[in-house]
Length: 286
Image (tube, rainbow, N blue to C red; front, side):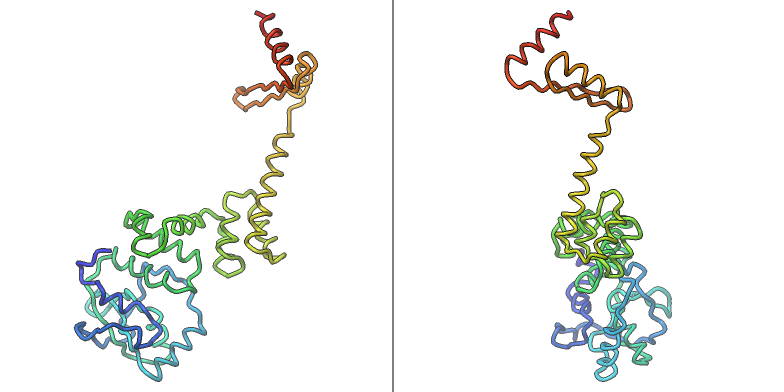
């Protein structure tokens, strides 16, 4: 993360939003302001779409009693409008608590850093759902050309975690909605990626209350059955040819063909005598 633009440890101290002073570092060198609450707008790169009302009410009660301990980090948009970089939950809770002014710290932040901290602030909280997390990462990739390695470094998670989370974006919207609504977990959803009829499988997972492991076994079993069924769907003419060649050679013959009229033939021999017999048959034709 680029620390040279004034966002260093000062902003890092503002990311937490549980309104507990014990989590603060010394902010005495950071200039704080009082800003009318209506002049603040959410971060346009905010990955979180759902805010738990119960948690907001609890935070609002704390704010009503103790005030906002950790100031909200913002950047200036116009003379009387400021975009929140970190602390949207505090801003929302302050509105519930009927607070008209909130403490803010103004930073000169680019879109890139605003997006970065919008993601960073939220992925550190356990209640961010996996699709919101994936959307946050996707914003960094699409708009600012972040690599997965760079995201992993700034977020503090493994590259594999970033990759697996982004893969959830491949799922149909119906399954993504199930993840957002908490009907299935990210682990369940990952087991459905690239699986035919995965929406129906998702419904089965929900109806039968399957564990992630059970969901993985279900989709794996279905894949095997599907592959076997594809193997058994042999054109009658090809099947007749297989049988004819089998009778002539005394071997099991399989013909694999493609739509462009390419393919291969396999002969399964049991011993060297059968192999020699096949070689003799081929040589006799030439």
